[in-house]
Amino acid sequence: MEASFPRIGIAGAGAIGCTLAARLACSGRAVSLLARGATLEALRRDGVRLTDRQGSHCARVTASDRGAELGAQDLLFLCTKSHDLPALLPSIEPLLGADTLVVPVINGVPWWYFLGERGRFAGQHVEAVDPGGRLAARLAPPQLIGCVAFITVESPAPGVAVTSNPLRMVFGEPDNRPSERLERLRALIEAAGIEARASERIRDALWTKLIANLTSNPLSVISGATLEEVYSSPDLHELVCDLLHEGLLLAAAYGARVELDPPGFLARGAAMGAVRTSMLQDHARGRPLELAAIGDAVLELAARLDIALPRSREIIALARFCSRRGRPR
Image 1: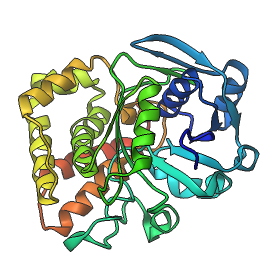
Image 2: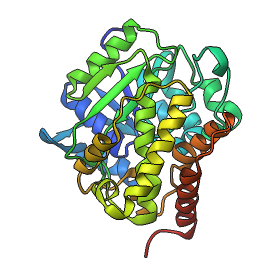
Image 3: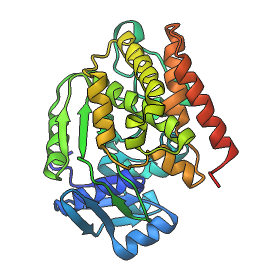
Image 4: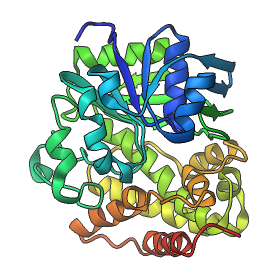
């Protein structure tokens, strides 16, 4: 790969994918988007559109529903829902060259969580997010860099992304070692107007985001609450604190250093405003929820260490019931 990542691909044109595509394209990079249906039509007709704290942006991208038409990429961001990744593998195969760097921008516990780990967790596997280990077999180091995206964004229409909150991404090698390609990736994203950091402890950032997901996403489906309401409502305060403490306990058991004070965490969550979580957006549209990555995988990790998460288990079960019952009427 050349230092500049001349061929940048994004698989998945939802809110996160469109945010990345717009930012990268507006910074002068050529971007290819793997999309389908109404989103593909909108991208071809109107380009990708983003409204963020810096204003409104529109950029032309190369969009297709055929990976072979886009060809092998130097850098490929996977921006789909975590539960869609196994089925997506055949579609992204043409985008994967021998030296393609793959960056999953997904919620929850990733399939790569134990890849590159040493000690007692070496060689383990998260079945809830990677049944049978297909993803780990195909997308593993050295082709992979871990990513945690702290981006709250909504997609009100195909090919459109809207956010009023800061954009931040953290990247790290699965084995936690510094690398030249990691710094090149960080610099690329920083140059696109997104705060970017390279970490030698990527799982610390992952647990910080995972705890945010765990305390907000399933509960938002049950309650219909926005982030502001989840983190500021007196009626939800005890629930959220229970979920927070369970998440911190599990993170510590897996050796993560999560620098998070509960009052500050709740205040920052409330300051996000009247934003619907990605899971609530999916529920409102009748789509499958990311409960495997944000819920089941957390419970799986807890069971490995015989740690009880009673409140998390209850809330995840209620969110699953709401999902199976269908979208709100």
